[in-house]
Image (cartoon, rainbow, N blue to C red; front, side, top):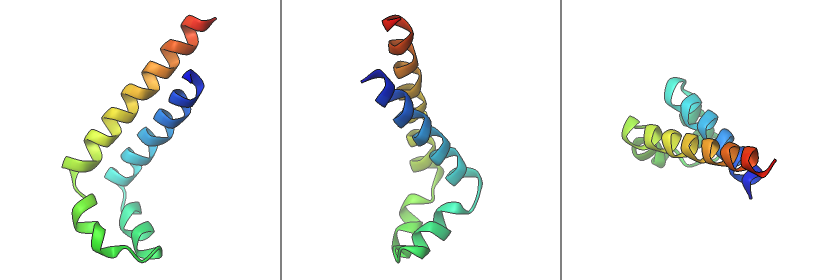
Amino acid sequence: MARFLAWFGGGGTVLGLVCCFTPLLPLVLGAVGATGLVSVLYRDSVLLPFAGLSFVMLCLGLLMMRRAR
């Protein structure tokens, strides 16, 4: 479970921050045909909390892995 939290949290953090600071999200949504979601998802009020929650999950997973040793 700890390993899953660490990997999922790390991936979510990287994805959230990359989509926040680069135009990657509109390109990906355009490629899959979901350009209508760009106006909803491409906001700092959505992406920054997602990145923060993912970072908390990453820290929790790493802490659990460290305590298991």
